[in-house]
Image 1 (cartoon, rainbow, N blue to C red):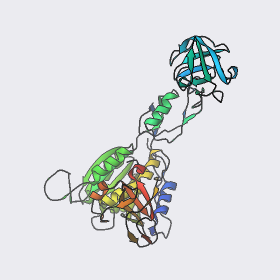
Image 2: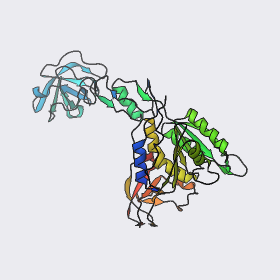
Image 3: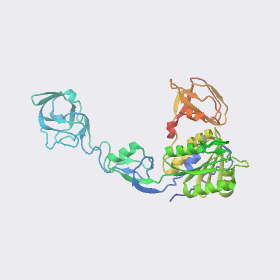
Image 4: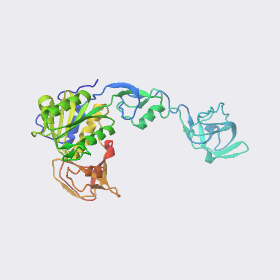
Length: 412
């Protein structure tokens, strides 16, 4: 059963008009909570852990060899060791059944359990074998080339933290400590609704604008590990938008809309939220973007994005992505940025945070798309990330340092 948010979770403080990007992100971070129930099940990529995972086994389960070589007791060997070879060998899954005497060494393969009486392994390439004896310079430290029992994980120790979004590397971590099932959050269900009389289905002929927002946001949600739900395309009719929002509230944990977020005659998303739900229109000091509708419909959070695909994409990355993570039970996450030289020149006015479609050239410099026009969707595909310019006035010249946010920092 999903948890409902408080009616005022998106409310801005009194007197706030234009909202700086950092303030908007801080308010979202502080006011949102997880809405997904916890269930038991087998671990799967993309799921969010509802509880910590504790190790059920030591890893490694025993002391074992990190290389192919010879196992021996370090303290019983001289600096230039000359030891007798024990009969047999140790291999992964086939431990040596006996115990080494102080003057013996045993042939051992990578991953094999160290035999009783041995604590160190010498690399095979460092050894000379003759007449049933092995000679080598003793390693400088006891325990060389040995993987110690439990050095990676101990029974009962923390293997994975609550809120971890499971990737293949986490599945491997859980498996090696004996965990196959855990308590995880149900997948966040995200309804996606496009609005506007001008939209047509991509691939259809005839007048109109192909709806790029639905496939874009569906792909975005899928890459984040959520379950996208298609709420269709609603024409600019209040009843049609209401019906679509009702379908979303009945089936989804959060709703993303595109278009209808301003205050015009045909902006029915904001109108319905204002009259029949909870509406908080944030005029965020960001470019591209600016209006971002945040509200509740039948208790379900609604993120009203601009209808322009470029602005919708940027707002989804910057604002919606970290918010959905919290709703899904994961911790808030800021994108990882990198400081790189600029390969462009630009003068920026004060007042808004700007995100420019960008990619790195062969010299590791950030080059930006040929135009900042928010209607040029081709720039999203051309780019491999965004250059973030701060709120104040700024002049950027080639070679100046700028902050580059690769798409990979947003899970894309």
